Length: 312
View 1 (cartoon, helix red, strand yellow):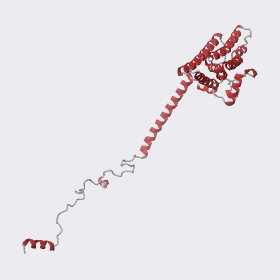
View 2 (cartoon, rainbow, N blue to C red; view 1 turned 90 degrees about the vertical axis):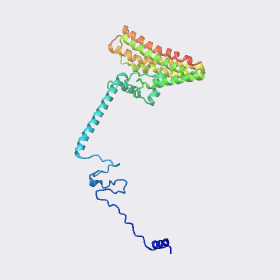
View 3 (tube, rainbow, N blue to C red; view 1 turned 135 degrees about the vertical axis):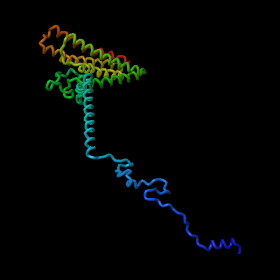
């Protein structure tokens, strides 16, 4: 037999012995040579990352020892107290400055109205001839809120009447194909300008006549703003019934506002003269009467001037 065949048969019949390749044994202090990364799970025995608290994300939790709590709480409490004091001081400063230029507290009084008051006041503006008691009621030297006294001045009706007047003016201009934002703005600014001129003129006249009265600037704005109610009625009737309806309603409203202003302002201007003991026929009292008549007579003139061009 050929020697190659004998060799193959011997290899097939003899079992293969295991390899005698030596595997390195890792020492207790050495890492496994076949491991790519070090195992840090047992790092506690080597003093690495000892006793990690369950703070999450592998970061150590903050210490909660009594010493740390003692140091942290006073600082946070002082910061909160300082911030609260700063906020209180800032609020007080803002309130003082606002009250200096805009009397918010007083404005709240002039808007203290309800539906019953508005209805009664509108009736008084259109029919002042039937009203008898024009005295403003007081409670402990303070006038009561307008919702409790129909004679008290308010700013709700003048403000709403002014806005409604501007809207009605825009409607009238639109029906005549003359509407434009500039013209509507001119109408509103003209009404405000005339109101400002009235207030300044009355205050200057009161100063020149040396009238000591409790009539404030806000009171003047309220009384002078009531004429917008009659202006709205005149323009609306003019749109519905033409110039005849406009002149009839506006004429009625002009007479009504004249009577209303006379009976209201005489208690504010002439009553002070009576309290001072000034004779009815005295020179100063005569000036006060003329001033009251002039203010009342100016209302119908302005009502016509601000509305006649809106009706054609």
